[in-house]
Image (cartoon, rainbow, N blue to C red; front, top):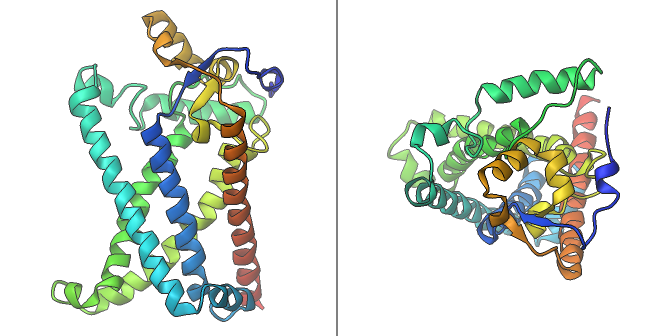
Length: 288
């Protein structure tokens, strides 16, 4: 059912291809920093009745300081969201080399399409031993879901956060009851986002057997030819037939970049796993 042999011979001597450029990695670094920062400065307020939350808040200098840092990380969120929209607009206008509709519904777009639905069904059948593993292109269906979830999260958590950050301004525009709604949405949607990222996203990206214990690609930007052929055979084959594969060829990741990826990666998802344990503990405690 699962073939791990492609990961056994990954080395410096094989071909490597660029999957994420510096800009993509920079924005993802901002996502990691801001998301972890928002969770660790926001959860002490949501679970202020628990010992771990009080200890964490005290470590940050009190709940007031945590709130200040929460706003800083919120500003970083809006920064990377704005920078991504700028890049997306630049890509569509200047970089895109396909007709707009063909690109919009094609493999280089993050827009879900019929192929993604087929992959979901095919993946379930493969899990059940009733079919072959789907062949993926540049973006899988779960990567598209993660990507679009950021828009949902920023829309709900971000705008509700702005309302709570600048109540005097928004009070001139909306009725008072909307602030109560904003508090609920901001808190519960943030809890949902943390639970999703620290479990499903972590598993899909780092903890599934093929990638365990850490996927370096988002940190180094590079993917080996063997991984490329195994994980995204349709993209590899398509670019080979188009004669564009060579444009992505690059040098192997350096030992320093791999070490840096491991340090950052393990710290990030170590923090996430610790927080999800705190959240589960608090939820179970509230049941008693």
